[in-house]
Length: 410
Image (tube, rainbow, N blue to C red; front, side, top):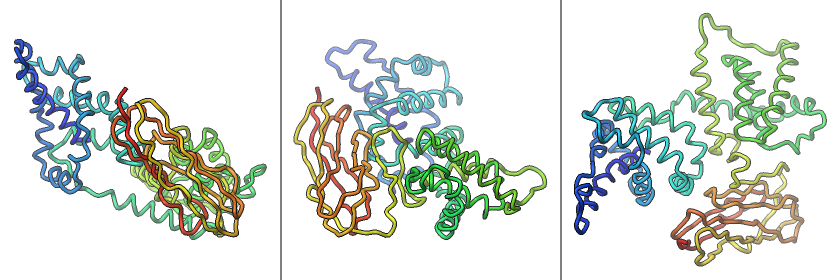
């Protein structure tokens, strides 16, 4: 993010140079402002030794798309905020920060090209934004004090790790407690993430004495709404609330009572970190994106310990050259080469522009099926390489499926 911010600010110098070197430049061409290139906050970020080390360590400049930088600057150029910034009599801290917030919120976060580029380079782009944006705004307030090499809070990581270990250890016990509350629902037909959240929530109610029950219920409802189905928040709320009432009636809830105020902010930050872990595939080994964004499909059928083998007939497809805006569809074929039913539990892609569809039903031994993949070339001009990740009960696992080609401008 900061490398991109810096690149947009510095593009003013390149733009001014191009205008000045025009054939017969006008006075307006010769007086293009480069004030933003010397933005005080950007200068302090560049002087921060941890920023320089992080930039070198992670090769961040190589990830910056020059065309996205140019588009962002040209959009910024005609905004009232930018014109007011370059015409101000003197620099002040509020103005320096305001112009960077303008770029962040409008030329970056609201930009289709910026987000598309981010989705291509970072598979968990959308989930990570929730955690990253507050950090960026914090750095804009105190750039000199920022530590760009700082690792995640170990307290939050310890919390997530302990919760994961507890759910795995108590898995059968938790499931037996949840099943009677499902009424008309079959446990193996409930959305995978909903069942994971129920087990996690129940674990906290029983084994994490420092977390208030109200916090547990509220946060898991929010996580269910954010990352599962449209009805998941209501479903998780009903089941956990029912479980809590029974546990309280049986005197099985034992929470520590704190004198004075409970540090709810710290507890909630743990949940936000936990939410990022869920979205990133750390909790329960399942990467789960928001329903409706088209980059992942997931089954509600459990694999259990039943394993089979798979023969993947098509692993790569090059569609050659298409014009921007066209959609490319290809069916990656595979065969159940084992002696047990093959269940494809999920199919996800490296970018939101690529939508995989998995078979809904188990594939019988000897049968052939396919993963349908649709690539939307809108906004993807140039060479493209997209990957599709498939999980199933096959051993060895599915290889990565690749769809590639070149998108020509309209």
